Length: 77
Image 1 (cartoon, one colour):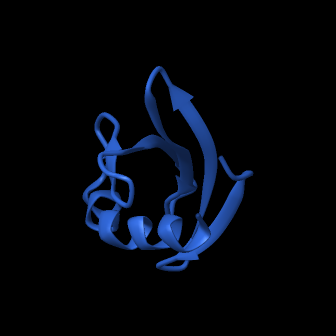
Image 2 (cartoon, helix red, strand yellow):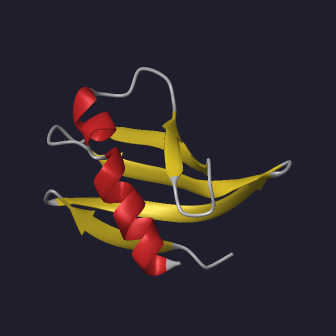
C-alpha cells in the first residue's frame, strides 16, 4: 500500500493512512470540521476501485463526500 497522504476536499484537509484489517484493505481517515472537531473513520475497499465509509455517528457532510473521497483515493493509488 501507499504511504500516508492528505488532500484538500471542500476546503478541508483529509488525512489518509493506509491500513489492513484481516483481508480488508483501505484507509484510516481524519478531518476537522469548521468548529475544530476531529472526525475519524475508515474507508475499506468493497471492490478494487471502490471504497465505503465505515464509522459511527459521522456527520452528513462526510457521508455526502464519499464519491469525492473515492475519486481522491483512486487518483492517489
